[in-house]
Image 1 (cartoon, rainbow, N blue to C red):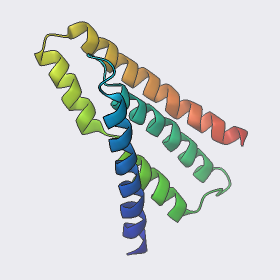
Image 2 (image 1 turned 60 degrees about the vertical axis):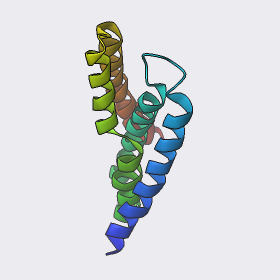
Image 3 (image 1 turned 90 degrees about the vertical axis):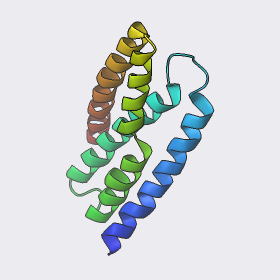
Image 4 (image 1 turned 90 degrees about the horizontal axis):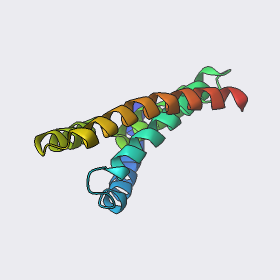
Length: 123
């Protein structure tokens, strides 16, 4: 039960922060959803850092890892919104913006996870 509450609490905080960031940033560019992009990239960085620290001599407890990686990062990042936004760009004929957003999200996301893992080794 404690583990479920940790995921619930972390996910709730992550979801609220995702909402606030997306609401404040998604309207700044017509064909690029900056808020969604940033929460997904920051989430990638954080999950790399959290899991890296978790693996590094048990720096984080299993419960802390569950709260932060599964709960917070799971609630903060959003694949469904990412997919919906890609669909809306495709159906509106914005193929260049679709391609840039898709490739940037994947490449920068993987780079952010890698950087988070690297950063955890430096701490």
